[in-house]
Length: 391
Picture 1 (cartoon, rainbow, N blue to C red):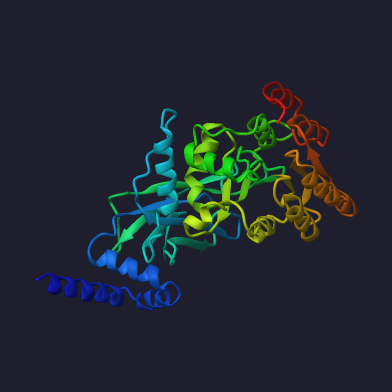
Picture 2: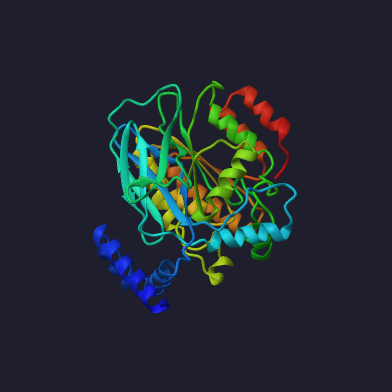
């Protein structure tokens, strides 16, 4: 009886794939991801594939094109963070966050400007839709609403329902944009101290992790601009994985750090890679920054990072490619003499491009420079300094 049922499940899955015209996607996945494909098909055949969870990411666009992106993962039931959560609970949530596999071949609907856009998730559960706007965007805000939904057999999945998210459109209110690194730039991470870094990731959550002192108010000052009324857009480009998206989003919301578009790194979970989480090749950061500056060629940018990794070198390459779009660069000095010396070398090379890179040991230095360059208002500067302390 069980054998017949399994055979029925197998032919049912094959029929479903053929009817939905997806057999080629499964074959491609079988070639490149044989173990993962087999695991997925077995789980689906015996009914252990759980339920899909849609995670829409904040998107961005201009008058010509919009990028919508998100991911569908297996729902492991990660609870919302609380101050009183135990270390064990935080550890369990982090392991679930990294262990949740992407859900391939799921239909996703995006509702924007009265249009319904459809796509299917890839092998890792990611999806991206390119859309060409037909309407002028609202100039009163840089954020527009967009709705996402999972689709099962052409119908919206009522289990999760419709999800609202946002898409960023810098407009005439924007004096400049801000591109910021995450780890040790505004989120205390200790990226150069592996044991301390993993301990923070594993045992704390979005509410109990801390920002670097003074950074939230400084970022708000940059967002408001020199007249105190601007709405300057933020892009957070990091080597952290997309698995951490919700944690970073909740962290920024909790600490009142300006909402922005996160541009993180794709990576499958591996217990061997967890130790190196947030590190590795940084070419993807350069590619993502280049994408942003290319999207907004008339918008100047301020770049913010730290001396702990390769931010100075990455930003130097950005300047070489977009010399007229970079207004200033701020690098937080983590106090390592060798790394600081490397940054000072980059500072000298950037002089020929007319772009100033500031290696700052305190938030005060960044605030003073931003005030002198008319990036922030005197009132905002006073507020930042009154709320800040030395790094």
